[in-house]
Amino acid sequence: VAVKCTDQVCSPHWLHAPTAHPQMQMRPMQMQPAMQPMMQNMARNDLTRLKTQEIVDGARTGGMVILGVGLCTAATVLATGVIYLVYAITYIPDGCGLKTYFYVMGVINIAMAIILAFTTFFGKGVAVAVGHKALHEKYAAEGRDAEAQRESEAAEEDVDWYGTGAGCCGCLLCPLSLFMGAWYIYGIEKAIEASQEGAADCGNAVTVFWVLLALNVLQQCAGGCKQQQVRVVRNSGAGSESD
Image 1 (cartoon, rainbow, N blue to C red):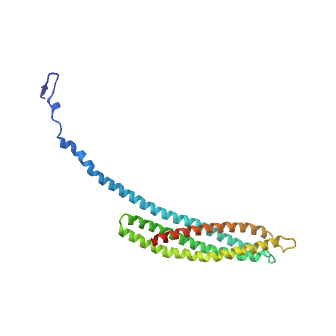
Image 2: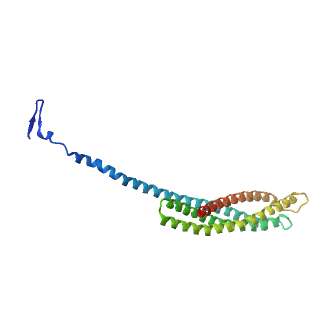
Image 3: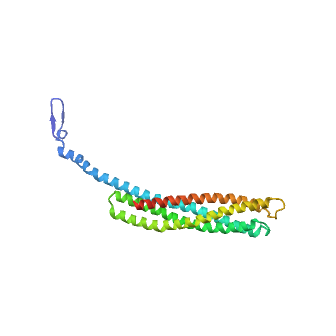
């Protein structure tokens, strides 16, 4: 090994070899700015996919919430209708004035449960349609015209079908609810009469009447809230479509 001596110290010659060329040292620094746009594009694409998935998941979650609440309400109303009919047939004497009330309320509750089930199905579809519309607006803002057009057509088709179905169910529920309200008044009158001295024997029908009446009122409130929720979702989808 060659040794190079100076006034201070002797050292091997390879310690004094020339350093790397400056361009070779700058090359990694020159590649870094070139990679930044690519990394930014990848991050942007990941963010876009995340937002799209969030929209899809949000629409699916909204539909499942409507489906769960609606089916629970419909099942409760159906069970109440069956209780009305079974109790009227089995436990209320023929001379009791509440017997007719229980029969009619059983039929009304069963019919309302069927309509609520259909309303729930249509409401879930309307929530999915709103998700399509949100994707349309997102794609249109990003300049993805083909995807925006596809989502717009899907949203329009779903709103036309499911929105119309939900509206028809609402038209059926409205007069049925009004009739049920009037029938409540009839039942309250008969329950008060059955509570008087000398009235026909009704067994425990009066107590059952008040319990089922309170349950029906709660069911009506739940059904009304669900109808309002479906109406808001449908109107938002229709409003977006008109835009």
